[in-house]
Length: 283
Image (cartoon, rainbow, N blue to C red; front, side, top):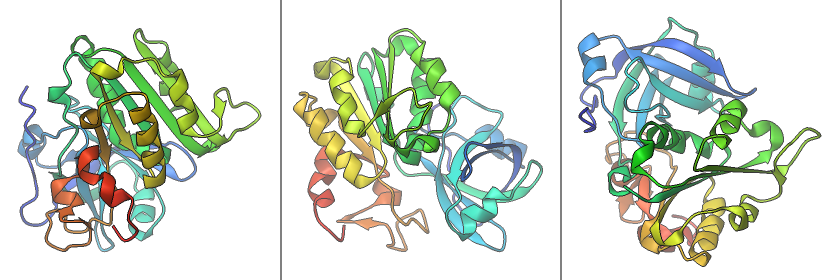
């Protein structure tokens, strides 16, 4: 398979049909889309960590991370939280409905450079969506990587989606799953506290590990400090940034981040390139 992304970003959005819809939580849902043009669907390629622009006709367009595996040819998966006008409109879609799609955009995770490494994924809230495609990628190509450590933090216990998948992943060989909620519940089986509390339990070799993070910036700063304290090299630490991306090609300026644009130069950045910007209000 050719892993090089094939972008559908020229001109107006391409028509796509919702082929499946899953309600993950009261406010989070997953749409699986298929491009209406069979040639475009066959040619479409993306790298884990990239995003698409989803256009709801007559309402607007939003950037959404791709959460499916690049080899899944039957559809393109997006997990979405209904928090604004466009995403609330997307939440009302059902199989058979049409939307527009442009993408993929941005730079993904450097998975081709991680052969033989332990893979540590740290996510907060719905920040799990951009790295779920990494989990799928690693599990489909398990022989290429070392240990897989999945560390997920949520604010409320009910915010955790894909519970069955976390249970299934935890049972796989050479895989560790650690989950924390700031506010647990009566039947919450995992840790109650901050996601950074889990690093002391994580089992990986920092000398040959690569960490990828996504979620609230405060959480990522704290997680980066913990990982670096555990002797993970700064060059092996990556994060996916979220900003108000509107054009997706670096023209509108809404997602400017220092001298970079999240949509064009990110959303995945090496920690060394963004650590100083994360410490300054306004960036």
